[in-house]
Image (cartoon, rainbow, N blue to C red):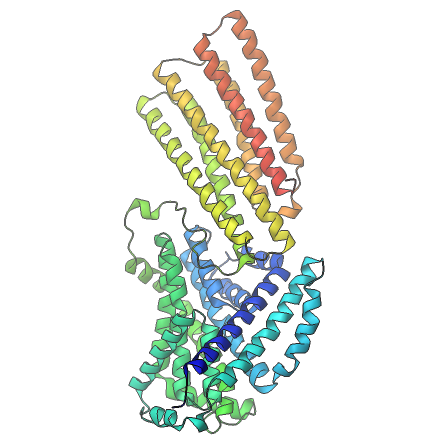
Length: 562
């Protein structure tokens, strides 16, 4: 076989060109439709059937099932999706990824879009120089789309012609049709996908080899099945650093694809006969058994049929898949089930616009931790039992350590996300979130410091009067309302947040603090309580007022005033 190292490097370069074009196209459409994507993802909590539709829409739009499945695993790890909901989303992602096959087979092999690829770049490149971020993003999409098909054309030319390498045909003819041969090529497809880390790229490579006559239709179909298994490795890798729930979500994805491939391998001859009939009688193509040029089209039909049939067959068995996933990935104890910080930024996310949504959800959860922190201070203020006080102080300290780690994790993640190209809206959101996590962490620091003061008060048997307890409780309740309002704003569309309620609550907190301080100074003059009592009391109402200021900072950051 006359195939040199240079030829191999040319092939790999062409494959890289194709993958890079797909990346630019995917990121361009994400930035252009970033807000719409976030709205679709925000609705990902209905049921498994709605989840299938969501997974299909997202994957069809961003052209990356890996991005959708990895994001889904991350969301399960964050507690934003249940295992049942995640199963539907990943099933939909499998259907969505079949759109790539149709695009590549028809635009790349039938319509020869490569002839207008360079004019498309000439049209898209000036758009990338516009000031408008939306126009820039659409320009990137057009350029990426053109590059994808230039890469495909280079890939077709880089794969050697079978006429010049007849020994390949003799090698392939040595494989007798049958179950074992199909299983071998399923393995080949899985390995290729794992190596290139893209089922779309692996599928396109298969299309090209078929188009050049290297691989017959049945073996190519087996490779497509293998590529469905290979793509599960991305989600499995993403779940390694996640908690038990993330690992179970990845396992559901793997089981769904493996079970689907298993039944399809057994029925492959019948399925391919049906695809042959559909290709000839319905689509008007030459039989894929007679013409190698028809195989890419037939494979795209087969890929869609397989994934649709697999979803229809297994969607009713989602509860069983969830049970099997739970059994196959047992919990290692309470720590494994507990809140984890590593779920954000598994290192596998290649879609920056979708990452912004994940970070936004994470920041909202951070605020919910802060809310619990504030309520624990209130519980500690009213608690009288020694053991309960020590337990509460220990818990507040643990939460403070958690918030320290959350701030570092989220900040690192946002830094990685901001290093990629983002839409203007997403860039503003990232800047706001970096400010917000700093303020939230400061709130937890204040809560921890107040818990130390309250513990010392209890140990030294320093008691607050009924009026002092009542005043502090009222102030903490106002702060709690401010935290709840901040959480509501964090969970909303940042650009539509109104600060009227936040400003009103901040004024009420300041007024209450002023009233408490005036009464406090009068009581000190009268000598109604000792110096230590007064110091701790003053620290608590001052600390709560400071938390109110920080919450106002959070709301201003949400509204873009940073």
